[in-house]
Length: 305
Image (tube, rainbow, N blue to C red; front, side, top):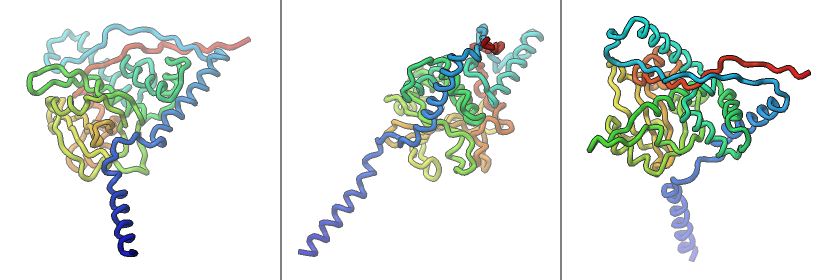
């Protein structure tokens, strides 16, 4: 009788140990979602205080069409136009590594920040609260968000079978869960990336997308074993930077970052830090589209009498 009970206990224990393998569809832990929601709550309180006292009133102006730097034929442009493009590129690269203003973001980038407010239950003053949330992120978090979403927005997915347009890579993202910026206490594969919830067809589109190589993560990006890397080529202009999607087995969540470097340099945190030396240049070479939409011209301070 004792032997029977012992065998039954061993069988039950083995079955319980096998359960987690079949439960990879769990939501990310609440702790992962808390940092962004904490920022939303703090931003909502700050914005309400500013609106109530009238201490800050931003004045913004709309810009014209988004400037683009052509990859070819730069020498054919008139000198004045060429100078303007050079200045725009310098402005873009500077902003890329130290982005300050929420209003500078492209509409779809702003919408992604605003979706965080919805997930965290904020219903008041979307634009002002979203701007405040963005302002509360530290420099590495802002640069990580701006760099990756800019690359996603300007990466077109094309069906390798028939050339059909599958939309932009940003369209694969359903929701932003967390931003992992610079953190010396974590390993390199846990820095400078976005944690996102994917759309239901994201994995299928990545499977079909031309110039994305499917593989597996065996050492880094634990719990995100499925890999889709955008094609890159060392020393080739415009081809050194590339997006990297790391998916959970069920395809519902992903870590998304950008690889800028090769060889042993690929293994360090600076590999995915757009602020690191040379990385912002590689970024602008791969994705030259500048998405400035609106830029603040001044901040008018109102003193209550």
